Image 1 (tube, one colour):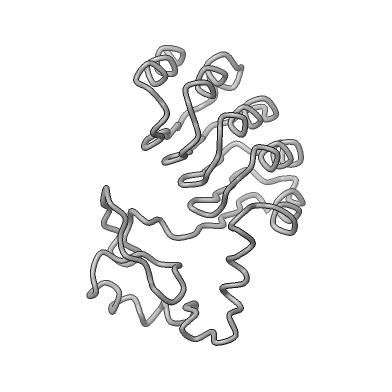
Image 2: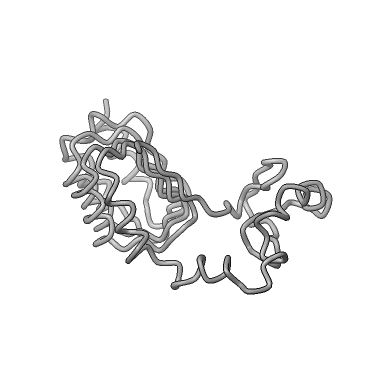
Length: 189
């Protein structure tokens, strides 16, 4: 296995028409796995969504799989780390990803080149663990990560990894300043 995608819904993109918004769309009230811009899209998507919606899951199996405080740990972390040849990891909108989890993943899956953590609650230390432990990061997306600051960008600029990055997304990271963005841009010249 070289690519692992464990995506949850993107609250800023309609799951049916894929239209985006600066505000969060309404989510399916039963399972919270899909986002919709309006009732029409929700109705149109029902023919496919009904098979995974907890509306059809009276015993709450889907809800229990999504619980555990939405943290990446235990079985999920062990499973991810068992894929030694993993090149791409996408955890978009999935988890609170603690920096120790990113350290464990980066030490066990050292071939990772494409890391997508959009909407995950990661912090500077998590980015620093990835930059420190992985040889060649080509893609790093941490869009809307609430706890990423200029500190992690500064470490990224000074690392050997910064020359290999082809795709960096730090949009909607509210703690990153204009100076932090300019620093990473200037280091890539």
